[in-house]
Structure formats: C-alpha cells, structure tokens
Figure 1: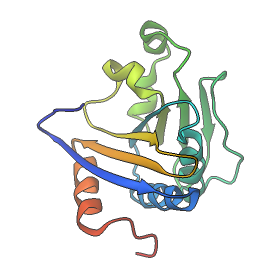
Figure 2 (figure 1 turned 90 degrees about the vertical axis):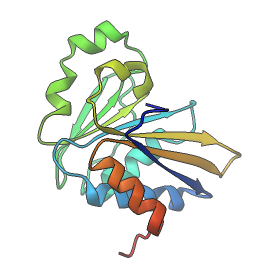
Figure 3 (figure 1 turned 180 degrees about the horizontal axis):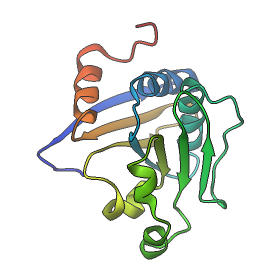
Length: 165
C-alpha cells in the first residue's frame, strides 16, 4: 500500500495503552459493515491490545484475545467483529479460507499480520502499523486506501484523536 496515489496517512505517537485505546475508540465509532483493518507490527508491539480496545468500543463484551491458533474469532457488538490472525498461514491457505466472505460481509474485520496476505485484502482498507519505540511508547501509522479510510485519515490529520467528540 505504501506509495499508492490513493493513500492517506496519519502518524500517531501513543505513550500509553490509554492513548492506543483513544485511537481504537475513534476508529470503532466510524466502523461500518465491511470495514477492514489490517494490523502489523513486531511480536509484542500491541496488535492484540489495539484489537481489545477496538472491540470494547465496538460494544463487544466478551474477552478478546489473539486468534493465533484458531485463525478467526467472531464476536458480537454493535457490528459483528471478525478478529483474524494470519501469521501461521501461507497465502494459499489464507485464500482457501474464503476470507472475502468476511471482508465483504456485514461485520468489521481486524486482520493481524495483514501484510502476509496483502494480495487477498480488498482494494480499499485501513492499514495500521505499530512500531515499538520503548516499553510504553508506540508509533502508530494509519494508512487509508480508498474511502472511507482516506477520509478517516484526513479527519485525524485535521483534528487529531478526540475521544470526547
């Protein structure tokens, strides 16, 4: 996605889990059926912590943990949430799962390690890259490809993350 002419970006410095939750809440409020969010970052960067905060603000009351071994976990909230971890899958294996039914369904997809299946993602999606700076600080780069994701990045760049809006 980097270098695409239709891409918008927002860079966010998170100094705590609370800061990460603010961004997750902002995005959860805007999510609509068919929203696809790819999450990438090293082990321990905060992908699952972001997913947990996002799920909370989407109205999911269940405990959300990494679907590393189950590949896909489904949760009910304001919208269905499909939390995926494709780290252990080859591109062919991921393709055989029929992920497009989730991507174009009535819920929201959070895909951990999404860069491993870029070819299978829809044309438009939101990509979040989390980089660890130290024990508590993360640099989160939000890249929107297509709409509404580009608009979300433009709004973030104009107004920042405001949980009280």
